[in-house]
Length: 92
Image 1 (cartoon, helix red, strand yellow):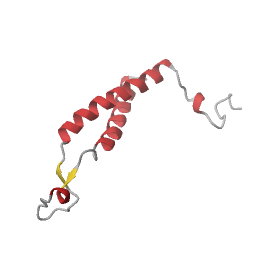
Image 2 (tube, rainbow, N blue to C red):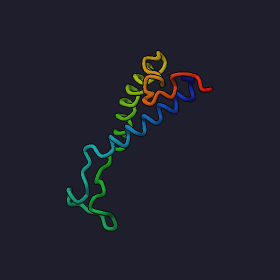
Image 3 (tube, helix red, strand yellow):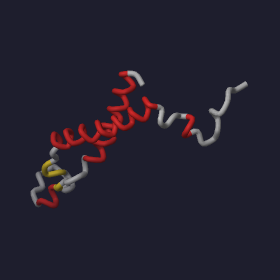
């Protein structure tokens, strides 16, 4: 795995983690009773994006480190997950 593919893998893991972390501990304007004119009742009252981005960065780094270790050491290869046996031998 080269540096660019490592960075791409980290970004994919970061965004997937970020989308999982976004809805955690959200208080909507409807729940708080402070709906601003022109917004939906389901809009967040406080989103805490900076805090969630830092949490996402830490979690994504741990997940990325585990995935990078697996890829670099060859613990699991593409041939290990070949369910249909298409990589078992050379094609003629």
